[in-house]
Length: 286
Image 1 (cartoon, rainbow, N blue to C red):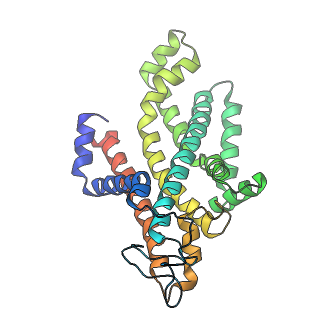
Image 2 (image 1 turned 135 degrees about the horizontal axis):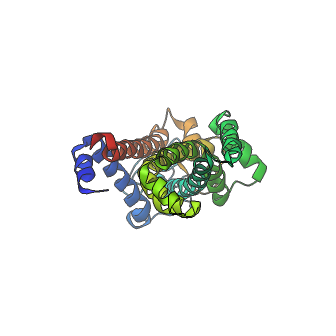
Image 3 (image 1 turned 180 degrees about the horizontal axis):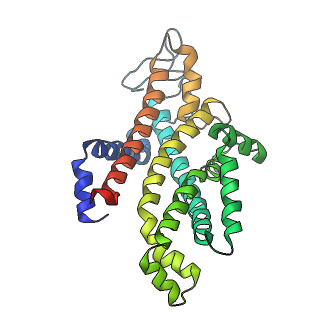
């Protein structure tokens, strides 16, 4: 990001708010075990049991306990670590696949290998025709696993479709510019042209799309946890915490409000950050 783009970003208040929320989420994920020393998977039958079930907030359990009398604050912070790790790693996998497919399709557009472009785009169209969560669950069922690695692979293997179309469109646009034509006339290899001339010029849209994709991954991981097909217990995830607490909403609404608010702020933060980066890096605004 150059200086003018950074200045535009700093003048964008929603973007700064998004960056602050993302920074807060990152600090919560990194420093959570230091701030809250309670074990997120250990039930406290001595101090964590209230009159009608989970204990209310206290000096020992800042947000109270959950339905199994485990510290709610510790599980919330541990869930932040899980959600952020899943979202970032799955997004990295999706960006790698989507960028590769988009570059390959855009580089063969209009050439004698255009059949490869058509084949890849038909695969993308077929994938985009399915509802996203249905596609995620179908791939997850095919893997027949529900651990952390499986969730990352499933989300990454299904989240690259939209990005590949963006990369393809930008690749076709850059390939028609004069400096790329000059590189081709000098006999440079198509792979060298794609990596040295095309990829650096489409890095901005990739970063913007990847930032928004992190928000989608957090939401998708939470939905999988709520449907009990994500990371399995006793690992704390926001989606599963939401499901476990919904039966006690009338007596202890914090069991639902806390994970819901965490999901909302995390998704909002990355969406605002992505929109801010898009506005800052948009060539039309220069």
